[in-house]
Length: 254
Ligand code: FPP
Image (cartoon, rainbow, N blue to C red; front, side):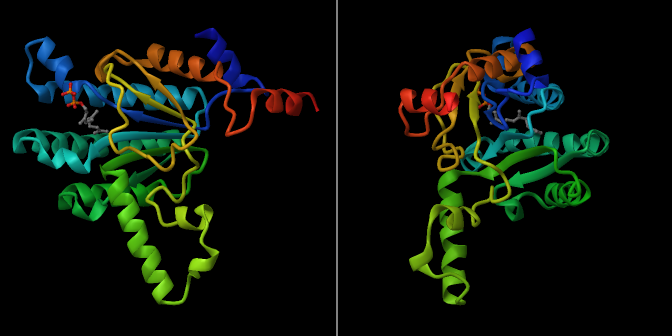
């Protein structure tokens, strides 16, 4: 734990710039305790607050949390409603906190399909925190990578039709401007909790070179100590971006 703390203040830091998290296991956390799934989500929100705080302490500039996928609309209506109510109260209670902590808030996903009251709060929070740039919190909401790609292709095609884009000039940098995450750097580290080893349609393109970390804890139990362990594991990884280990060593000596 100390190693991570030290790294965050050292000049040769290996603190990831962008950490993205698949917060899994709320339902199982609750069921194990004989509680309704909604209680697991409520505890999950409490952990969101702890991890946002911890990420800021570690000076992680971008934190992206997978809070609701396009597939989650298939859950029982009662659970969807509970999640929307939690999101609403999270936004109401956290807006002031985000402003105080100077954290910029964003959403990745189809925001216009969210319930009206939630969408209004999301827009407000996005607008009011717009001036901040050092720390960034993004909620992936009504998000799915495949939907994101289709939406991006649609918008890109529209730009081509209107003469603002030339398909002969198309490269990834240009195309990525049409993704929901256009303003964000690619994630360096993607964490999934609850012992599942899947990526579940989350930031598939953006994570092309990300490191993955799978934790056995359910999300409500994945507190700051677990988070720091993940960051420490990341610090020990060698990221090669398609190069060889030797190339990287030579580069660091030159
Ligand atoms: C996965 O647990 C979690 C979700 C589908 C939603 C994540 C949501 C939260 C942490 C709360 C809402 C967040 C905010 C910021 C208000 P699961 O239900 O799939 O768990 P299971 O796999 O054990 O059933």
